[in-house]
Image (cartoon, rainbow, N blue to C red):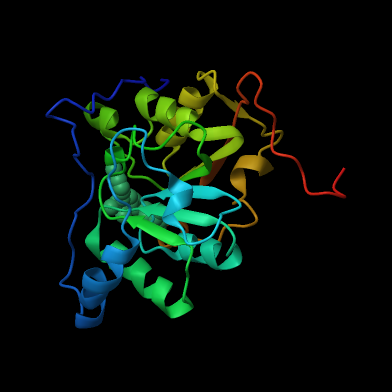
Amino acid sequence: MSPRFVPLSVASDDTRLRLYGRRRGRKLRAGRLGLTETLLPRLRVPLAPAGALDPAALFPFKPREIRLEIGFGAGEHLAHQAKANPDIGFIGCEAFVNGVAALLARVRAENLGNVRVLDDDVRLLFGLLPEASLDRVVALFPDPWPKTRHHRRRLIQPETLDEFARVLKGGGELRFATDHMGYARWTLLGCLGHPAFSWAARSSRDWRARPGDSPQTRYEAKAHRHGRACVYLVFQRVPRPGEGLPRPPAGDI
Ligand SMILES: C[S@@+](CC[C@H](N)C(=O)[O-])C[C@H]1O[C@@H](n2cnc3c(N)ncnc32)[C@H](O)[C@@H]1O
């Protein structure tokens, strides 16, 4: 049976800011607690009035691209990407305090100057970013909410796809990974039915293999240990009328 794509009403009390996982885990060690008190306030994304959050202005340099990672877990993917691309600005969003602290430890250890953090529900960010202000939105192994009656709590919903379509630049990417085949079908269905997204996969290799620039995440490693296959979906934001695709670097044509 194909998944039913039920709209999420962010305003409804039942679903508003309701998370699958916990916001707090084990007590933080003193060092990590210290990072949440000293480093986090310096990196935290301010919740500006609607449309008024200029993501490029969050960084002390002019970023070549801006990428948003939602639910970064312990931050291994985000920190890896940030280290490999010091000229790109990364915004990480994670509601689980221990995960945020783990990312902060990586930021400090690697001295990363291109990471900013929203330590809360990504939906608080919706509407704040200007249109066409991001180059990539990444959601790796978002909580699957497997029970049918909970599907409307999944991150991928018509409303969230509309928001991703709004904030992504033409030619920008939406990357999604999951080990839950129902959620993979749900997301494929949602994106294929959305006029702003296209899927360029040609063969099963395109969705069975992790994108080459991505390291394995903690959750993905756990899925493999339990013998679960993973699906990686990469969608392109269709350019708006008059919006050119990003130009390839000179010499690539
Ligand atoms: C299954 S874990 C995956 C973590 C990581 N991406 C990985 O692959 O290891 C999902 C993460 O998303 C976070 N999360 C869930 N809903 C969220 C939301 N609405 N906003 C921000 N983070 C969220 C959870 O706290 C959790 O850390």
